Length: 82
Image (cartoon, rainbow, N blue to C red; front, side):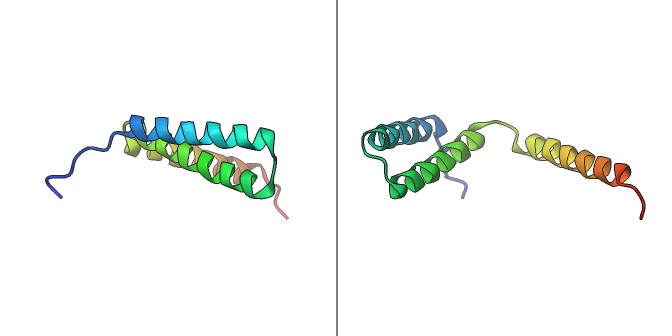
Protein backbone atom coordinates (compact mmCIF):
# COMPACT_ATOMS: atom_id res chain seq x y z
CA UNK A 1 0.00 0.00 0.00
CA UNK A 2 2.82 2.43 0.76
CA UNK A 3 4.25 2.21 -2.77
CA UNK A 4 0.97 2.90 -4.61
CA UNK A 5 1.21 5.36 -7.46
CA UNK A 6 -1.29 8.23 -7.52
CA UNK A 7 -4.04 7.75 -10.05
CA UNK A 8 -4.04 10.19 -12.95
CA UNK A 9 -7.75 10.85 -13.27
CA UNK A 10 -7.29 13.39 -16.07
CA UNK A 11 -6.00 10.67 -18.41
CA UNK A 12 -8.83 8.34 -17.46
CA UNK A 13 -11.40 11.11 -17.89
CA UNK A 14 -10.03 12.00 -21.33
CA UNK A 15 -10.17 8.36 -22.46
CA UNK A 16 -13.68 7.86 -21.12
CA UNK A 17 -14.85 11.14 -22.70
CA UNK A 18 -13.47 10.03 -26.08
CA UNK A 19 -15.31 6.72 -25.74
CA UNK A 20 -18.59 8.45 -24.84
CA UNK A 21 -18.20 10.84 -27.79
CA UNK A 22 -17.61 7.91 -30.15
CA UNK A 23 -20.64 6.04 -28.82
CA UNK A 24 -22.83 9.13 -29.18
CA UNK A 25 -21.67 9.56 -32.79
CA UNK A 26 -22.40 5.89 -33.48
CA UNK A 27 -25.84 6.28 -31.89
CA UNK A 28 -26.57 9.31 -34.07
CA UNK A 29 -25.84 7.22 -37.18
CA UNK A 30 -27.64 4.06 -36.10
CA UNK A 31 -29.77 4.28 -32.91
CA UNK A 32 -30.33 1.11 -30.91
CA UNK A 33 -31.52 0.35 -27.37
CA UNK A 34 -28.30 -1.54 -26.58
CA UNK A 35 -26.17 1.41 -27.64
CA UNK A 36 -28.28 3.78 -25.57
CA UNK A 37 -27.74 1.61 -22.49
CA UNK A 38 -24.00 1.52 -23.14
CA UNK A 39 -23.90 5.32 -23.49
CA UNK A 40 -25.66 5.73 -20.15
CA UNK A 41 -23.28 3.28 -18.50
CA UNK A 42 -20.20 5.03 -19.90
CA UNK A 43 -21.54 8.48 -18.95
CA UNK A 44 -22.07 7.28 -15.37
CA UNK A 45 -18.49 6.06 -15.31
CA UNK A 46 -17.32 9.41 -16.70
CA UNK A 47 -19.21 11.33 -14.02
CA UNK A 48 -17.80 9.02 -11.35
CA UNK A 49 -14.26 9.68 -12.57
CA UNK A 50 -14.89 13.42 -12.60
CA UNK A 51 -16.08 13.26 -9.00
CA UNK A 52 -13.04 11.25 -7.98
CA UNK A 53 -10.80 13.89 -9.54
CA UNK A 54 -12.27 16.60 -7.31
CA UNK A 55 -10.29 17.36 -4.17
CA UNK A 56 -11.52 17.01 -0.59
CA UNK A 57 -13.95 14.13 -0.69
CA UNK A 58 -14.62 14.52 3.02
CA UNK A 59 -15.76 18.12 2.58
CA UNK A 60 -18.03 17.19 -0.31
CA UNK A 61 -19.54 14.36 1.73
CA UNK A 62 -20.16 16.67 4.68
CA UNK A 63 -21.82 19.25 2.42
CA UNK A 64 -24.06 16.57 0.89
CA UNK A 65 -24.98 15.29 4.35
CA UNK A 66 -25.81 18.80 5.53
CA UNK A 67 -28.01 19.45 2.50
CA UNK A 68 -29.82 16.13 2.98
CA UNK A 69 -30.40 16.88 6.67
CA UNK A 70 -31.78 20.34 5.88
CA UNK A 71 -34.11 18.92 3.24
CA UNK A 72 -35.39 16.22 5.58
CA UNK A 73 -35.94 18.68 8.43
CA UNK A 74 -37.75 21.16 6.22
CA UNK A 75 -40.15 18.44 5.09
CA UNK A 76 -40.67 17.20 8.65
CA UNK A 77 -41.35 20.70 9.93
CA UNK A 78 -43.79 21.70 7.18
CA UNK A 79 -45.92 18.55 7.20
CA UNK A 80 -49.22 19.06 9.06
CA UNK A 81 -50.08 16.88 12.02
CA UNK A 82 -52.76 14.28 11.49
